[in-house]
Amino acid sequence: MVQDQTKLATVIGILKRFGGRSRQLNRLVPLGQKQWHACLPWLQHWQGVAGLSLLTSVSIAGLSLWLLLRQPTTPGNCDFVLWPLASASFRLYCAQQAAERHTLEDLLHAIDLIDDLPRDHPLAPEINRRLEAWSDQVLALAEVAFHEGQLNRAIAFARRIPRQVQAYAKVEERIQRWQEIWQEGEAIYRRAEAALKNLAWREAFQISLQLQFVDCRYWAQEQFGAFNERIIRAQREDRQLDEARALMAQGGADRLAAAIEIVRRIPPTSDIYPGARRLLNELGEQLLTSAVVALNRHDPQEARRIAGLIPRDVRSARSAEDLLKLATAEEFAQAGMGEDIDRAIAQARTITAERPLYFEAQQAIRRWQADLKVLHTLAEAQAIARGGTLNHLHLALNRLNIPLVDASPYRQEQIRDQRRLWQRQIEIAEDQPLIDQANALARQGTPEALLEARQLLEQIRPRRALYQTAQNRLKELFPPLVTQAVGWQPDADTVRLNEAQRRARGGRDRDFAAAIAIAQEISPNSSVYAAAHQLIVQWGNNILEQARYWVGRNNRQAIATAELIPPTHPLYPEARELIRVWQEAEPEKPF
Image (cartoon, rainbow, N blue to C red; front, side):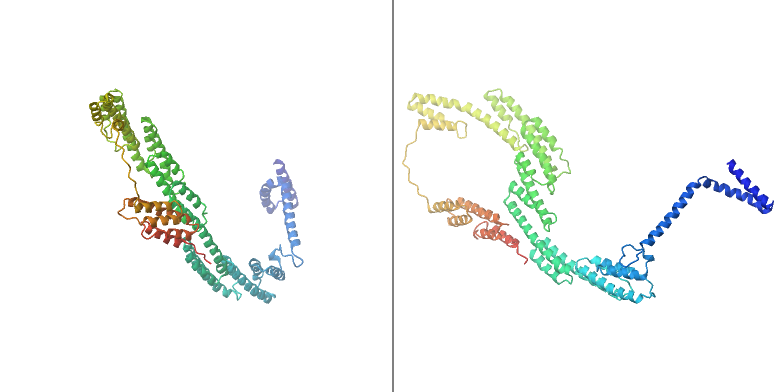
C-alpha cells in the first residue's frame, strides 16, 4: 500500500511540473486518488481479468462464425436454420419441402414459416397462394383424422389454420359438425353398451346397428365391428356363468366351490364382470349358509372346511372369518370338560360387537356356560353313583333330572346316555332276580313250577332292559304252535309300483318319466299310495337334476328334459318356470 501511494505521488509531481500549481490540477488530485483506490483491488488481479476478457471475446467471435457457417448456402438444407436470419425465398423453399410430406404437423409447420412474412413482400402473391392451398390440405387431413377417431387432434389442427385464408371460414362449421356427429356416435354406443351389460344381447345388437348410419368411419366401421366382437365375447362368458349357476342350483359345498372357480375365469375387463361379481357374492353367501348349517349341527370340522372355501373378496368374507373362529371354539367345547369350554368361551369373546357374527358368538357363549353347569351336575351325579348300591344309582339318576334346553345337543345326549346307562343298571338289578327265580322253577319241570315261572317272566314289562331276555326264555319254555303259511298274492297297485320301480332303475330321464306315468295309475285308496307318491316326487327331482346338467352345455336338451314332467306332477310349476328361464337365457347369434 505504501508503494502504491508513492507511485501516485510521483505521477502527480510530474503533472505539477508540466502544469504548474493551477487550481484545476489541484482539484484533480483528490479525484485521482479516489479512482486509484477503487481500481486497486482489480489491478491486484489483472492477469485473471485479462484472461476472462480474452475468453469472452474469443467465444463471441466463435459463436458468430459458427452461425455464419451453419447458414444454408444451397437449397435442401432446412434441418437447422436460424430463421430470423433466413431470407423469404429460403423460407418459402423450406415450407414447400415440409408441405410435400403431407402430414398435419408438416403442413402447419410450412404455414408457420411463411405466415409471418410481410404482406407487401414481393413474394406475397405466391405466399398467399400456397397458404390457401396448404390450409385446404390441413382441413382435409383434419377430416381424415376425424374419421380415424382422432376428434381432438382434428379440432386442434383445424384451429391453427390462419385467419386470413378462405379455409378458415369453414373451420368452426366443420368443428361443430364433427362434434355433433361424435356425440351421436357416443350416445348410440352408450345405449348399446347399457343393453350389453344387462345381458340383453338382441337389444344391444339392434342398437349397435345404428352406428352404421353415423357419418364417421370410426363409429360406422371400427366401433361397430369392435362392439359386435364384445357381444360375442360376452355371450361366451355368460355361458360360463350359466354353468356356474347350474352347479349352484345343485347345491353342496364342493359344487359351489367349483362354481366359484368358473366365475373367477371372467376377467375384470369383461362386460359381464359386474354380473360375475354379483354371482360370486351369491356363491359366497350360499357357502356361508352351508358352513353355518354345519356349525349348527355341531360339526366344526365341516364348518371350517366350507368356510375356507369362501373367497376373501366377497361380501361374506368377514362373516367367514368369524365362523372360522366359532368353529375352532366349538372344537374346544366338544373336546373335553371345563378347561376346554373356558377356552371356547375365550375364543368366542374375540368376536366383538361390530363383527357380523357377534350375535351368534354370544349365543354360543351362553350355550357353553350352560354346558359348564350341566357338566358340574354330571360330575356330582357320577360321584353319587360310585357308591355302587341300587339306592345310590336312584339318587344319581334323580340328580340328573335337570333342565337341558339351554345346553348343547351333544351335552344333552351325554346326559341322556348317562341316564340310560344308570336306568339299565337299575332295571337289570331289579329284574335279574326274577329271571333267575324263573329259571330255577323251570328246572323243576312240573306244570305248577312252569306256570309260576311264566308268571315271574311276564312281570318284566316292555322297554325294560331284560324284557327281550324274558321273552326269549318264554319262547323256550312255551314254544308256539306251528301253522301252515297261506300263500300271498300282491294286488294290482303293488304290481304297478314294482313295475314303476323297475323302470326307474334305468336311470335315464325317460325311464323316470315312464316310472312316473305308471305310478300315477295307483289308486289313492291303495295301501302303497303314500310310497308311490313319495317316489313320484323323487323321480321328478331326478328329471330336473338331469335337465340342470344340460344348462350351459345344451339348453335345448335341458328344456326337452324338463318338459318330461307331466302337468299332474307336483313339480310341474317349477319345471315350467325353469323352462321359461332357460328359453330366455338361450343365446342368440347377433349375426
